[in-house]
Image 1 (cartoon, rainbow, N blue to C red):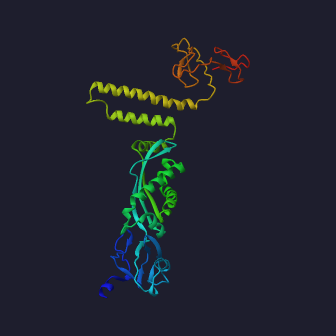
Image 2 (tube, rainbow, N blue to C red):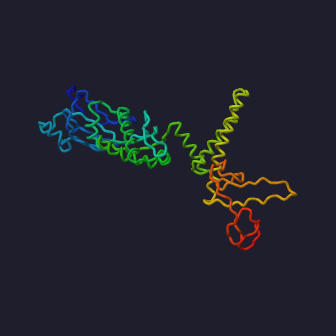
Image 3 (cartoon, rainbow, N blue to C red):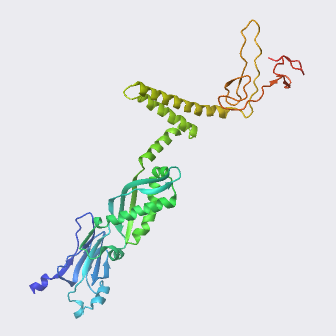
Length: 368
């Protein structure tokens, strides 16, 4: 009788002293469960009885006296004889339904994305997530198997791969730019969480939190973002970009004039400075060109000098860029614009006159 009593279970419970155990199989050690034994299921626990690999009865938090009333499926499977008071064999699994928090995830390989501003780029990310068992029966069927215990580390790699896959799907479907993604991590985390939720549900799990802490870009893209931010103060135009890069290049050239101060190094630095100055001049002149009117303003040729004064060279100015030209020039030697004949207009009546006219033929106004 003593041997029989030691092989009978009268109290079944699990005191969880860990932070990462999801499933715990109660150690039977060849013992049988006595009808009328006490089962204690604590808060954030679910107890499941399994007979010959088949899930039978499920118990939520509470204290139970095991009888045919609360073991209907197992009673039917075993067909207990002798008034259902004899011992029986069954496996008991305790499922931890609390949240498992602060689990880390990260992209082991970069995720390729098509960005409307930078083209095809690769990004990396990392963060944290939390989950809990939402459907114990589905979880046991899909993931647990026959292990004695099941911890978060046993499933973390599998869940991480699902998370990264969901992030890739969200990026492809949202078509969000890299800059908008980096500036709206909270919104992007919520969108990704919705995609992940469906995949976790199929495993009997519920994702309770998902956080993207950081998204990093390749070094070249980060430099482009910094340049774009610096240009934002000046205005986002091609002329601004040319001016910005030219000034930076000249500053770098000033810091490195040549190799050990040799004449050759100085010559190279001087040549680079002249070339960059030319580029800068062209960039700056483009703004002046934009400000000129569509029709060039007529320029009156200067009156010939008197005998008392030294003769002055006759000149005119380009109607496109304003460069000084000779009076006979047909094309501008600065911008190449074709020059229109110089016309003299009466300031009083507006009639066109000859370039040499001193008085208006129509109203007699003196032409200066």
